[in-house]
Amino acid sequence: MRSLPSNRLLLALGGLTLLSLTLPRWLLWLRYAGRIHAPADSPAMPVAIVFGAGLRRDGTPTRVLADRVAAAAGLYEQGLVARLLLTGSASGLTYDEAGSMAAMAVDLGVPVDALWVDPFGQRTMTSCRRAREVFGITQALLVTQRFHLPRALALCDAVGIRAEGVASDLSRYGSRISRFWELREYPASLVALLEAAFHQVAALPGPDAHDA
Image 1 (cartoon, rainbow, N blue to C red):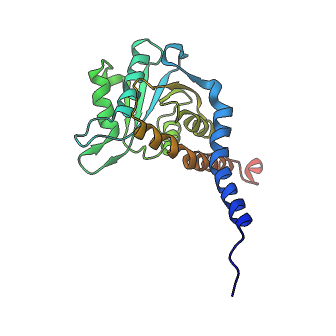
Image 2 (cartoon, rainbow, N blue to C red):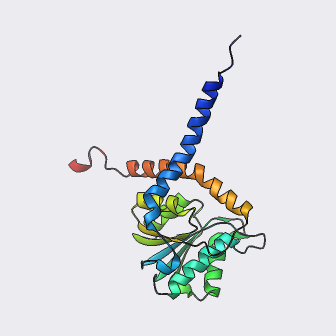
Image 3 (cartoon, rainbow, N blue to C red):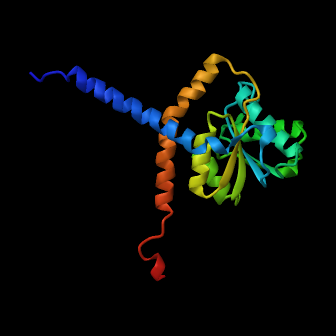
């Protein structure tokens, strides 16, 4: 009969698992905290990238998403950006994050011709990559809540976008909502570091590139 793992082994495995989830989050905060600004202290950039964050059942933005759009509209009104890229996911005929974001932005006074709408931003990495490859963005303000900004900044760095973050924490969110988003960032930060590393390695020239 095989013996069960010792308590020490279980504790060690648990500690390694906890470290693998918390360390990436801590490293991203350490690296990018200095590039996160309040809306009133934001630098000027050509464009603001606004990330999706879900819709209500009636198709309107959640409070988290509405704050992102409102913060970005404020940047446009102040003349700190000339254009907004609204990026989110779409599914079926009724779920369209980017379209709902665009409708809200127009209601807040942003003209339609100042909007880029990308319905294929299912994930932060996808949004950043498409911002660079499809829309040609090389400099941007990233508009999202503070908990999300270190990861978004890291991924934009990886794809070649020089970015600064603008924290769109305009509302007081309920403890349940805040806990969900904060906990979600721990595994997401680990995935983001792996995605960033993979993208940068994939972008390296091949061994014959200098001989071409």
